[in-house]
Image (cartoon, rainbow, N blue to C red; front, side, top):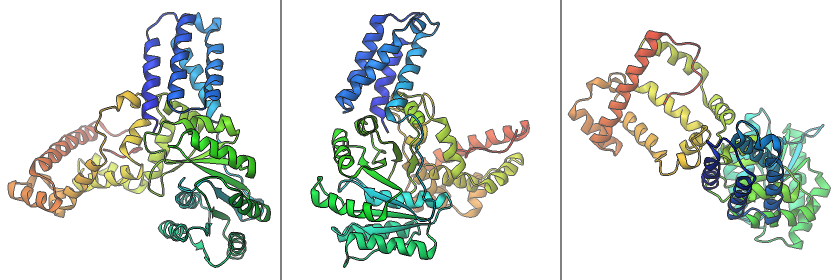
Length: 440
């Protein structure tokens, strides 16, 4: 996410590091570079100009130019202005005083609305909510089937009926939610390839009848200014309450994320960061600004780790490490917990100093975990507990069963042996506290 723009920001800041003083000319040069970065990322021209004007105004002050670390001061100014640009503070979902809370999902066709509905339902379930999905996109029968599929995957029921109107199916969903105790109603509405009056009339009819607590506009994070223009059109007709950015797992140029709040004055509430239905994050402007500038996002990383960590298994693993009994089975369990945290490139991008250029060219391959799993799964329970028994014939059998090579098995066993030695050293020194993060 934002790898290209992050690398460019790091390049600009690198020029400032090590300077005892920063002149007004250097501030102007940096501002010009940042302006170019924003425009290349497809940020709205007026938004980019306002951002640069604010940075220059604060950076040329006496307290900055005469400070001990002017470069750090300028980085902080850019960070603070970026936080303001993309939202300022976290904007949580509004809830109804009397359930169900109605959340209406709108946007253009192809922006990822239906998948977002499934992700939102899954997210709400993780927060002890009881959501109900409503298939109100009757223009495309495939959209109804898709919503039913994602609903089944997250174990959330879907209200659907192709032989009715969008308003009637929404009202039917509302009545079912009240009768059966669902506390959140998610309406997956129709989209078009472009904004038209018929679509808006349909959405306004639903809005006026159900009075949703939230109307979330789903914007395709990869489309830049197109997404901003579509958001402006929906805002004028519908006045939505928040934004969800989809498809942010690729190296998108970032224009939509950096412009859409400033243009619409509506908060970004969610980020969709992958294809899986658990790849949805609350949008924290301060954390996102840190990620964009290559400063990492340790708080989100810890939250992901805590969500993925099985505390009971962690306690058992701690005891095994104390007894120097760490096996390939334990290693396999740790891989499963790491996978729950998301793609490795995403995880590494949250570590300070690991964004942008630090990751460029590095092979952050999630398939490596898949191959490791396949090798361990092809071993017998005895071989997993006692990997030292792996002779040439056993390795050939495992290679054949896992679709890998003997060389890859040797590499894994060598890495695991080094890990076992580290565990023994830990056990001799004594572990301090309980395990907080999965081993890798």
